[in-house]
Image (cartoon, helix red, strand yellow):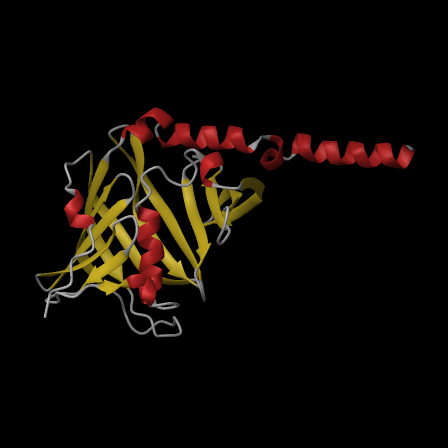
Length: 256
């Protein structure tokens, strides 16, 4: 009995004095949403248009560095419910990648026949597919998290870019587990990790600045198996810009 009481007392002391375990997931998520600008403002956003520079780093088929990256101008357009379109200028011509809520597709400069990004399993296409789907969620993974996920757990703390973060484990109703890391000081999202078919993808969010009362990351860096393959540096961000649904839709293939 004495031994049992000692064990219970020890476990209670861990919960009471370990900050990462002392607060509930609900409390942490609520604080995070307030830090982002508040649940009401987040849900009120209908669309967003971002502009800046996109550093694209070429990778080999086995996801190793294939050469130096090149920075190009980029525009990112996001609209509810889950649409996103990116346009990268390459020597005056647009490289387009988009997600229309069902399909992730890409259109190379001068091409009329779109590429289905998810078909490139384990390759750059699948990486782009995962990245687009993440960008398409204006709310982020923690708004209405009880409806989105089967289970969300606070599993401890971890260092991200030299800063301490809370580590949350997001278990879906089906599919792969995702992790989200919240800065312990600002409570902004520092990193999100998710597995692909053959790799681990992580997206880091930095340089938060207020835009219409919302905290928007102005640097978004994506890595696969620890190797950077994409980095967006924002120069402009606008909320509730009118955007037509048609620009996100998979283009119809030309008839022969």
